[in-house]
Length: 236
Image (cartoon, rainbow, N blue to C red):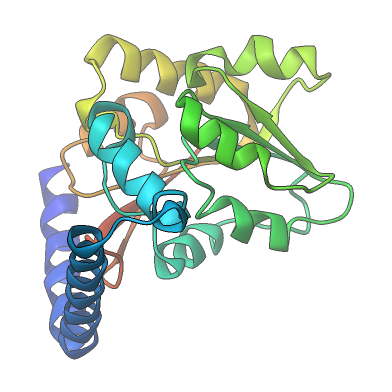
Protein backbone atom coordinates (compact mmCIF):
# COMPACT_ATOMS: atom_id res chain seq x y z
CA UNK A 1 0.00 0.00 0.00
CA UNK A 2 2.76 2.47 0.93
CA UNK A 3 4.60 1.79 -2.34
CA UNK A 4 1.41 2.62 -4.25
CA UNK A 5 0.94 5.85 -2.30
CA UNK A 6 4.60 6.81 -2.88
CA UNK A 7 4.29 6.34 -6.65
CA UNK A 8 1.04 8.27 -6.65
CA UNK A 9 2.59 11.12 -4.69
CA UNK A 10 5.40 11.34 -7.27
CA UNK A 11 2.73 11.61 -9.98
CA UNK A 12 0.87 14.17 -7.88
CA UNK A 13 3.88 16.48 -7.54
CA UNK A 14 4.61 16.11 -11.24
CA UNK A 15 1.02 17.16 -11.99
CA UNK A 16 1.29 20.11 -9.64
CA UNK A 17 4.56 21.17 -11.25
CA UNK A 18 3.33 21.11 -14.85
CA UNK A 19 -0.03 22.72 -13.97
CA UNK A 20 1.24 25.29 -11.47
CA UNK A 21 0.68 28.29 -13.74
CA UNK A 22 -2.97 27.37 -14.34
CA UNK A 23 -3.54 26.44 -10.68
CA UNK A 24 -2.09 29.74 -9.46
CA UNK A 25 -4.23 31.72 -11.89
CA UNK A 26 -7.44 29.88 -10.88
CA UNK A 27 -6.70 30.31 -7.16
CA UNK A 28 -6.12 34.03 -7.63
CA UNK A 29 -9.41 34.32 -9.51
CA UNK A 30 -11.21 32.32 -6.78
CA UNK A 31 -9.76 34.48 -4.03
CA UNK A 32 -10.63 37.67 -5.90
CA UNK A 33 -14.15 36.38 -6.50
CA UNK A 34 -14.63 35.51 -2.82
CA UNK A 35 -13.23 38.87 -1.71
CA UNK A 36 -15.57 40.74 -4.04
CA UNK A 37 -18.47 38.57 -2.91
CA UNK A 38 -17.91 39.25 0.81
CA UNK A 39 -17.21 42.92 0.20
CA UNK A 40 -20.68 43.18 -1.29
CA UNK A 41 -22.06 41.42 1.79
CA UNK A 42 -20.37 43.92 4.08
CA UNK A 43 -21.56 46.92 2.09
CA UNK A 44 -25.13 45.87 1.54
CA UNK A 45 -26.90 42.56 1.86
CA UNK A 46 -29.80 42.47 -0.56
CA UNK A 47 -32.59 39.93 -0.77
CA UNK A 48 -31.30 38.71 -4.14
CA UNK A 49 -27.84 38.12 -2.67
CA UNK A 50 -29.21 36.10 0.23
CA UNK A 51 -31.19 33.92 -2.12
CA UNK A 52 -28.30 33.39 -4.51
CA UNK A 53 -27.20 29.78 -4.95
CA UNK A 54 -23.57 30.42 -4.05
CA UNK A 55 -24.43 32.25 -0.86
CA UNK A 56 -26.87 29.52 0.20
CA UNK A 57 -24.24 26.86 -0.45
CA UNK A 58 -21.57 28.72 1.52
CA UNK A 59 -23.93 29.43 4.42
CA UNK A 60 -25.16 25.84 4.65
CA UNK A 61 -21.72 24.36 4.13
CA UNK A 62 -20.25 26.42 6.98
CA UNK A 63 -23.18 25.64 9.25
CA UNK A 64 -23.08 21.91 8.48
CA UNK A 65 -19.38 21.39 7.74
CA UNK A 66 -19.37 17.92 9.33
CA UNK A 67 -21.83 16.67 6.70
CA UNK A 68 -20.77 18.82 3.75
CA UNK A 69 -16.99 18.62 4.19
CA UNK A 70 -16.37 21.74 2.09
CA UNK A 71 -17.46 25.36 1.80
CA UNK A 72 -17.10 25.67 -1.99
CA UNK A 73 -19.07 23.70 -4.63
CA UNK A 74 -17.15 21.22 -6.79
CA UNK A 75 -15.63 22.71 -9.93
CA UNK A 76 -16.43 21.66 -13.49
CA UNK A 77 -12.88 20.28 -13.68
CA UNK A 78 -13.56 17.88 -10.82
CA UNK A 79 -16.99 16.96 -12.17
CA UNK A 80 -15.58 16.18 -15.61
CA UNK A 81 -12.72 14.10 -14.20
CA UNK A 82 -15.06 12.04 -12.05
CA UNK A 83 -17.55 11.49 -14.85
CA UNK A 84 -14.83 10.47 -17.29
CA UNK A 85 -14.73 7.25 -15.26
CA UNK A 86 -18.31 6.39 -16.27
CA UNK A 87 -19.43 4.57 -19.41
CA UNK A 88 -22.68 6.44 -19.99
CA UNK A 89 -23.56 4.20 -22.94
CA UNK A 90 -24.21 1.31 -20.54
CA UNK A 91 -25.08 3.10 -17.27
CA UNK A 92 -28.77 2.65 -16.45
CA UNK A 93 -28.93 3.33 -12.72
CA UNK A 94 -26.62 6.08 -11.46
CA UNK A 95 -26.61 7.12 -7.79
CA UNK A 96 -25.17 10.33 -6.37
CA UNK A 97 -24.40 10.63 -2.66
CA UNK A 98 -24.24 14.06 -1.05
CA UNK A 99 -24.86 16.17 -4.18
CA UNK A 100 -25.15 19.43 -2.23
CA UNK A 101 -26.59 22.11 -4.49
CA UNK A 102 -26.19 19.98 -7.62
CA UNK A 103 -22.78 21.09 -8.93
CA UNK A 104 -22.04 17.59 -10.25
CA UNK A 105 -25.70 16.60 -10.68
CA UNK A 106 -26.17 18.91 -13.67
CA UNK A 107 -23.15 17.40 -15.42
CA UNK A 108 -24.50 13.87 -14.88
CA UNK A 109 -27.91 14.81 -16.26
CA UNK A 110 -26.25 16.19 -19.38
CA UNK A 111 -24.53 12.86 -20.01
CA UNK A 112 -26.93 10.05 -19.08
CA UNK A 113 -28.76 8.25 -21.88
CA UNK A 114 -32.55 8.70 -22.31
CA UNK A 115 -33.61 5.50 -20.51
CA UNK A 116 -31.27 5.95 -17.52
CA UNK A 117 -32.08 7.31 -14.08
CA UNK A 118 -30.11 9.45 -11.61
CA UNK A 119 -31.04 8.99 -7.94
CA UNK A 120 -29.63 11.51 -5.44
CA UNK A 121 -29.32 11.04 -1.68
CA UNK A 122 -29.21 14.33 0.26
CA UNK A 123 -29.91 14.81 4.00
CA UNK A 124 -29.48 18.60 4.24
CA UNK A 125 -32.85 20.38 4.10
CA UNK A 126 -31.65 23.43 2.16
CA UNK A 127 -29.66 21.42 -0.38
CA UNK A 128 -32.57 19.01 -0.78
CA UNK A 129 -34.87 21.93 -1.62
CA UNK A 130 -32.31 23.28 -4.11
CA UNK A 131 -32.13 19.89 -5.82
CA UNK A 132 -35.92 19.76 -6.00
CA UNK A 133 -35.78 22.84 -8.24
CA UNK A 134 -33.95 20.85 -10.93
CA UNK A 135 -36.75 19.80 -13.24
CA UNK A 136 -35.58 16.76 -15.14
CA UNK A 137 -37.63 13.61 -15.89
CA UNK A 138 -34.68 11.29 -15.16
CA UNK A 139 -33.82 12.76 -11.76
CA UNK A 140 -35.09 11.40 -8.44
CA UNK A 141 -34.07 13.25 -5.26
CA UNK A 142 -34.39 11.42 -1.94
CA UNK A 143 -34.05 12.99 1.48
CA UNK A 144 -32.33 9.95 2.94
CA UNK A 145 -28.97 8.80 4.26
CA UNK A 146 -26.52 6.98 1.98
CA UNK A 147 -26.71 4.02 4.35
CA UNK A 148 -30.26 3.40 3.16
CA UNK A 149 -29.36 2.86 -0.49
CA UNK A 150 -30.78 -0.68 -0.62
CA UNK A 151 -34.26 -0.12 0.90
CA UNK A 152 -34.72 3.25 -0.81
CA UNK A 153 -33.83 2.00 -4.29
CA UNK A 154 -35.77 -1.22 -3.87
CA UNK A 155 -38.86 0.90 -3.14
CA UNK A 156 -38.31 2.42 -6.58
CA UNK A 157 -37.94 -1.00 -8.20
CA UNK A 158 -34.16 -1.09 -8.61
CA UNK A 159 -31.99 -3.94 -7.36
CA UNK A 160 -28.51 -2.74 -8.38
CA UNK A 161 -26.63 0.47 -9.21
CA UNK A 162 -24.22 0.64 -12.12
CA UNK A 163 -22.33 3.65 -10.78
CA UNK A 164 -22.27 5.51 -7.47
CA UNK A 165 -20.75 9.00 -7.41
CA UNK A 166 -19.96 10.20 -3.91
CA UNK A 167 -19.13 13.67 -2.58
CA UNK A 168 -19.49 12.54 1.03
CA UNK A 169 -16.76 13.79 3.42
CA UNK A 170 -15.88 10.27 4.56
CA UNK A 171 -12.88 11.35 6.60
CA UNK A 172 -14.99 13.43 9.01
CA UNK A 173 -18.04 11.16 9.19
CA UNK A 174 -17.91 8.88 12.28
CA UNK A 175 -15.98 5.68 11.46
CA UNK A 176 -18.88 3.30 12.09
CA UNK A 177 -21.19 5.27 9.80
CA UNK A 178 -18.67 5.80 6.99
CA UNK A 179 -17.75 2.10 7.02
CA UNK A 180 -21.43 1.11 6.93
CA UNK A 181 -21.97 3.46 3.97
CA UNK A 182 -19.08 1.89 2.07
CA UNK A 183 -20.15 -1.69 2.74
CA UNK A 184 -23.82 -1.12 1.93
CA UNK A 185 -23.00 0.76 -1.26
CA UNK A 186 -20.50 -1.93 -2.27
CA UNK A 187 -23.15 -4.60 -1.77
CA UNK A 188 -25.65 -2.67 -3.89
CA UNK A 189 -23.27 -2.15 -6.80
CA UNK A 190 -23.63 -4.37 -9.85
CA UNK A 191 -20.67 -6.60 -10.66
CA UNK A 192 -18.05 -4.44 -12.45
CA UNK A 193 -19.94 -1.38 -11.21
CA UNK A 194 -17.90 1.52 -9.82
CA UNK A 195 -18.00 3.65 -6.69
CA UNK A 196 -16.38 7.00 -7.54
CA UNK A 197 -15.39 9.16 -4.59
CA UNK A 198 -13.41 12.37 -4.26
CA UNK A 199 -11.50 13.45 -1.17
CA UNK A 200 -8.99 16.17 -0.38
CA UNK A 201 -6.33 13.77 0.94
CA UNK A 202 -5.14 10.15 0.72
CA UNK A 203 -6.03 9.36 4.33
CA UNK A 204 -9.08 7.28 3.39
CA UNK A 205 -7.26 5.10 0.84
CA UNK A 206 -6.69 2.16 3.21
CA UNK A 207 -10.33 2.07 4.32
CA UNK A 208 -11.49 1.97 0.70
CA UNK A 209 -9.05 -0.89 0.07
CA UNK A 210 -10.52 -2.79 3.03
CA UNK A 211 -13.83 -2.88 1.12
CA UNK A 212 -12.79 -2.90 -2.57
CA UNK A 213 -9.43 -4.65 -2.29
CA UNK A 214 -6.90 -3.75 -4.99
CA UNK A 215 -9.59 -2.68 -7.47
CA UNK A 216 -8.97 1.02 -6.93
CA UNK A 217 -7.57 3.56 -9.39
CA UNK A 218 -6.39 6.93 -8.15
CA UNK A 219 -6.32 10.20 -10.04
CA UNK A 220 -5.89 13.83 -9.09
CA UNK A 221 -7.56 17.09 -10.12
CA UNK A 222 -5.28 20.06 -9.37
CA UNK A 223 -7.67 22.64 -10.83
CA UNK A 224 -10.40 22.08 -8.25
CA UNK A 225 -10.50 24.39 -5.22
CA UNK A 226 -9.09 22.80 -3.13
CA UNK A 227 -7.33 20.15 -5.31
CA UNK A 228 -8.96 16.75 -5.01
CA UNK A 229 -8.10 13.06 -5.25
CA UNK A 230 -10.50 10.82 -7.16
CA UNK A 231 -10.88 7.16 -6.21
CA UNK A 232 -12.49 4.84 -8.73
CA UNK A 233 -13.39 1.66 -6.81
CA UNK A 234 -14.65 -1.27 -8.88
CA UNK A 235 -16.66 -4.22 -7.57
CA UNK A 236 -15.32 -7.50 -8.92
